[in-house]
Image (cartoon, rainbow, N blue to C red; front, side):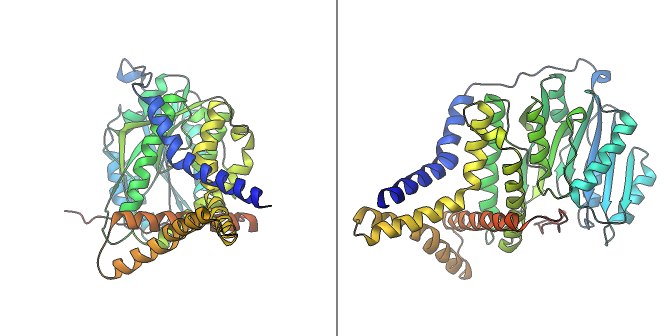
Length: 404
């Protein structure tokens, strides 16, 4: 019995280290010197038609700035249409978007009167866009969120890759703004920044970036798959369906866009718990894509996502296993338990105390953020086990910087 506990403990530790350390280092090494195979559109007429797809719910704080950023995108005239669906917004979102639609014929507005969730809105808008422009290889969707501001060059940077017929998804480079010292926004920004680079390198090495960030990415319309009504993480589901069809997905660091980062711990926990429940939906929907992890896609999916999603269970096994072995008088496992308990309990508590005193140390905030992220993963698993009956959710509160 004791040796089984020891094996499970070390396998759990290996799983965490591989996902957070060994796999990112491997990707950094394998991607060194690699460049994307960039084919080039030779003239303005060659660029494909683009439909920007966006679901909005009670976004009156950001919707004007978002639409203005979309109207300023650099793209050949006559090839860009905007499709905005309001998911039964109860604030001024509908009035704001309707006013823009009245002035810009290429902005198509759909004020839905019953809530259906972001995936339901996207499903409806993509149907309409395909009816208008067709669903062939030369029609590109840009799926974006109201909180994400695309830089003017972002659209061309995303779409240029579709000259290559093997590319079906291109993710943007998300840059966070509005960080604050006292919250978790800087820890979240550090995590997302490492994820951006990891996904970029996966695209260079495998051609299989394991899921876009969802706030802004490009998709060949012929590869779009309708998202089931109860699925919570639509962008990951869409990407996995592309991989089932043999397509490739990459990230472009030059396709920059900006999003205010979350600051409040409670808000971030709620968001990550929802995403976690959606992650487990995808985990059990696409087991054939990650097991066995012997091919590039399976290895990347398993290393980057599956092991990370199982992180809370690994941590529980390490804590419980080391405690049990320590009680047997093993000094080494006593040390292991002390280090783990200190890292997962004492360091976050110390951060809470120092934060109350006005002191903010990024390493301590990172430890607290890691614990919160794994607790949210665990809560998401519990929600998944209970059953997901709706994908309707409330927008996350973010740090929107004041306008100059």
